[in-house]
Image (tube, rainbow, N blue to C red):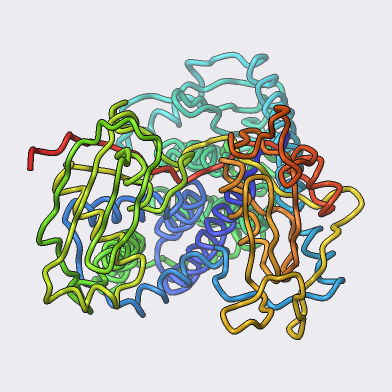
Length: 607
């Protein structure tokens, strides 16, 4: 079964790829500005662009959000936050109301709903194919290594040790003589060895031999095999992204140029160095792996021209160093700042009433245990406050935070078993203000009361829970799409007696709604089924819905004398009803669900 959260993962991956691509483009502009400087600087920049693919900005954004929460709320301009959010999350779900699509666009929407599954099915194929190709190439090199013998003396060893002393290398590099025709190259990361083809020394003069050995020695000093292996990991995971492979070419090019620059500084003989590279190409085959650093990598013609022109690359001046420092600070600070902005509006929204209108507080709040044993429960917001009779605390918390039962977790058992009578009232001067508050503001007042009197502490958390995915059935939907001029003679009318889209009737095992989007339909189903329902239909219009089924838990009032459900609640199971009546289907899956976690709660003090 395909996990339901693939679309969520796909959206996060698309955002990560977009951000990494933009980062690589900006690095490209930096390398262009530093084209006359040392190649090792540009190599490090391209390596940073590669590593960025393994480090999502969401980690730094989360760090900024955590820091913001620990420091409390801050003032943020909402317009600025909105712009930053759109730029950083271009693939998140849009909040713009959808226009009812044509049948053709509905078909495209249905096909696009399977796109995440198709992509996630293809990715392992490319991943395995990439690893398989590299394994085969690694096997070729390791086979040559197994047949090689270590040499401790000779002109090659003497030249290598002399170069190590000149370069300040303390740990000597092992030299292995191989019968394979592979070019001289550094094999290994932790304990690198120099693989030297047998017979090439006879074709090289001492100066040529020393130049090639110097090139390989600088590969060891720069740890080029390690950086190449890191990028190979990036290529394996993001094999489908052309930019990743282009980055690999840039890394090899700058790596070889950086070694060329170091060798020319060491031996100061450009012609000899160029001749040594050409002689090696005549005798040997290039290394099949980027993480086995050889001497013939990158564009050979460009390298020879650069070597022979004897142009000395300049070191970074103060202005360019300042440019690199500023770019690094922006790259790290920007996502952290976004995390601050992302956390701050959440607090600002929760305190919006305090910035525009001061919420009234309950002047009197009486809380008493109810031990009557009465099964009836009453919860309501009154004109001057809030009233609850015989109510479990869990139900009051659900009302305050507007969450269904299946999206709450935690808390001691007594919040279900013990019941309370609550009368909370504002003073007379605030009663008029209270009448003009919306439901969210009433709930905020109730939340404050629970925090004050019950010491309630909660937080939101995303968990993998059983969900239902609502999909289009095999034979297509059986839905009537609502039109703007529709009338509704079925008795569902507004206060003026006029049929209107968006009105509905609900009851156990029954939903009758007119002109509703699928987002509202899945919300109603979630309430009825006690489990989160996710819309995977791809249907974008407003529809008339009439659905009747036999619920799993039938109220006692709807069971007849014969022990069977009354006619108004009779029907098939919800799964059968969905297929037969609406042409849709419910599929049980697991997916991310926002859950209200109760961290702490205490019994109230005596009034």
